[in-house]
Length: 78
Image (cartoon, rainbow, N blue to C red; front, side):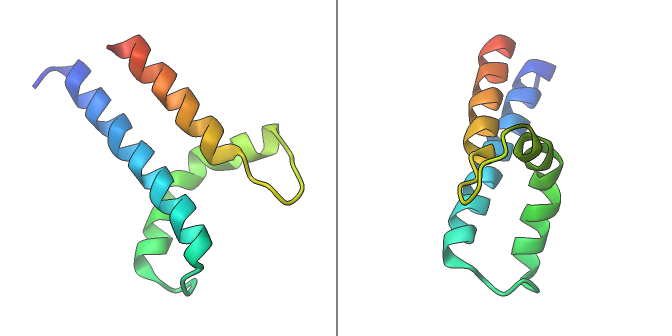
């Protein structure tokens, strides 16, 4: 497996984790849920800084922005 394919695969998995986090935010599971904690730990290093860059009250566009930036990065890699 080439490094290019490995990076693309990692970025693809990360986009899925962001989607899972968005869906979980609508379902609102218990905060002690291990899956939720793992998804938050993995995605927050990217979503947190983006959330600070585009402060919006009530709506969080950081997952959408992260998704778009990752897709742009994937196109540059491919």
